[in-house]
Each structure stands twice: as structure tokens, then as C-alpha cells.
Image (cartoon, rainbow, N blue to C red; front, side, top):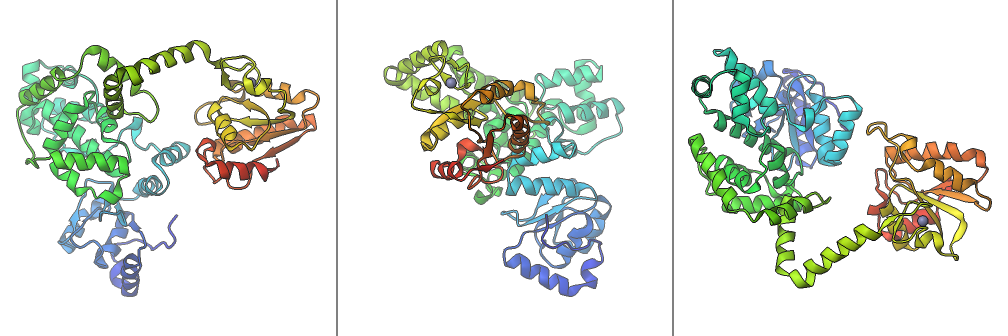
Length: 483
Ligand SMILES: [Zn+2]
């Protein structure tokens, strides 16, 4: 991944001053500079980390602090971004270079791709969807073994509902004794401790992902976004200002801006648990009627809509009851009742065979194979194809356990075997799964002696078909090549 790799070692910078000049120059000219392990010493010696945050191998945290007092060394972190636009990133000791690579893939490609890569490499990244950072938030204490065990447990389970009673159960102590010993050992009441874990986790998620703030709240254990926002403001007023706008995509950006606006920038509060509880209760009492909440919860499950957008949508629906809500309700009911999958091609319609399969003017000799119904719609929008379609219902995926028998492949072979079929066009995404599926289908169709072609021109690697513009799709179909 790096264009230029420099050997690490705490002494490297001092013995290679010309490299330091070059490093400064490269960074000033817009190069991204990252380090792993003791590589951060070269960056430190070059002055790139002055007045900034950094990390390094844990055994070198103290030496770095001593030698470079102007650097804020975060020994508790695996990845530290030194500047606002992520042009300098330092990683912790030894194997944290894998975290660094995944972080960079997450930044430069997508979080989705980083997760896929982690899964592919059997790298236990964000175990069970969680960051490992929560474990590092609070100082571990060893004086009280029972409480230490609960701390360990809470680091992995901080998002669990009714967390304090769960922790009490884990400790096998009475409620009162647990609360007292926990406070004595950690300096925090149990609930406040968990809040801190959750907030720290959300800070990490905000800084390292594009997840909207509502979804983050849910991930760390707050089902009610209003109380999460309130707590978040209280604990980390400064974070909203610290995260720079260019770092965030527009959506998160706006949310953070709103957050910052509402921030009184209170100091880290050590309020009693009772106060947080009452905050949560009061926020519960202001929420809408159960019918409305149920509607919001359902809408929030629609892809692309989080709880926040769902709430906004429901508000609009209720405002425009006659113009929007009633027609929408009947359209939904009608679609639910009438729309079904075509038994021939797998597309959705109110009739079976569907309109596309029934139209006599379409070419029976051409079958265009796509993964999803949405791809049929995209190709029809582009208007480039006049044959028949075949929807697989997904793509083969070793990672997600999708096997040939899970897709409509035997139906495709059956259709392609019919007399008169000249060509099968594989219009699949240019992703790993899309290509795997393409190869598999080409092999299955080969014995039939028909042409098997695939889209070529203009489908970018990693490209999802239904996200392409019509012109690109048109060109891709026109310049298809034999498989
Ligand atoms: Zn059909």
C-alpha cells in the first residue's frame, strides 16, 4: 500500500537527517505520512508531530514522551490521527500495522471494504462489531479482583441492556456491596463507568467511521437517541468541535454541526447515576405515542433510513396525512398484496409471467443475467437491452455462505438450454463476488454451446450495477465481451 516504505527504529531519524528533510517536504506537498511501531520516531524527529497527538510501540511510549515533550503521546491508542485531515497517522506496536492498513482502507475506499478485508484475512477487527478501544478507556485496577473481572466483562458488553444489574449479577455481590466496591475500586459509580465506556466508544466510531450519530448511539447501547445525544453532549462537548468538517461526509457533518451548536461545552461531569437515570426517564416521557414510535421503528429498518430520518419522515407523513400518508398506506397495502416474483425471470410484477417476460417484441434469443431486481430496473432505465432478463437473487459469496443452490441458477441453465437462445449476457457487479459468480455461470453454461458474454467497458472495479449512471450502463452493455 505505501508508495515509499521507510524502515522503523527509534534511532533511524537521527542517523538519516536527509530522509527527515525529504519527509517534511513530502508532507508539505500533500503526501499522506503514516507510521507503525517505532516508525513514529522518524516523524517525531522530522518535527511532523510537534504539538500533535501520536502513538508508538507501548515499550517506547515513555522514551518518546521524554525525548519529544511537544508531542502528546497516546500510549493507550492503536491508531492516532495527528491532524484534522488524517494526513499523518501513527499506529501502535508491531502488529497494529494491520489496524493501520484497515483504517486506511476505511478512509480511502470504504468502511464496508475494510470490514470485508478484515474478514477475508481472518483478522479479528472490531470484534463482534465493536471497537477494542473501550477496554482502554479506564485505568485497570487490580486491587479488587471481583470488580476487575466485571470491568473486563463490561468492556465487551457495555452495550447490553440493563447493564448495571447485569454487572451486579456478574460480580455475584449484593446491589449495595457491588456499588460501593465498584466505586471504591474504579472511582466511578457503575452506571457512570458504563456511560464513559459507551461515550468513548462512540467517539472512536465518530472519528474512524462514517456511521451517523444515531446509529452509533444504538451500537453502543442507547436505544433512545435523545438521551444518547444529551449524554454525548455532556461528556464530550469538545469532540464536536475537534472533529474537522472535511473528515466527515455531509450527513454526519451536519449532525455533528448540530451537536456542536447545542453544546454548552460543559466540563466532564461526574454527576450521580441518579441524575442520568432521571435524564433518561424524562426523555422517555417526551417521546411520541406508542403507535407513532412503532411506525418510526418500522421505517428505520428501511435501508438508507436511520432512526433520525425515520422520525423526520413520520413527522412529514403525519403533517400531510391526506396528501401523503393515506395514499402511501394504500399503495403499500396494494403492493404487498399484488406484487410477486415472476416464476420465469425472478423480477417483480403484479402478473406472472411478468410484463418483461410477456412482451412479444422482446428478443427471446438474449438473456441478461443480473443479481437483483434493482439491476433490471437500472438496465431498463438505460433502455439499452431488448432481450429477456434473469434475476439470480444475489451473488455467490464464500464469506456470506451463498452457494449455487441458493440462487436461481438451475432455472437459468434450464432457460438457456431452450432452443433459440443465442447469448447469455452476465451483467454482474465488478466486485469479487460478481466475478466469482460470473466465472461459475460461464462454466455451467459452456456445455450449451451458446455465447456467454459479460459487461466490460466502464464498470469500475468494485462497482455495483444499480449505482451506475444510465450512460455508463449503456456503454457497458454495448461493448460486452465474450466470457
Ligand atoms: Zn419475468
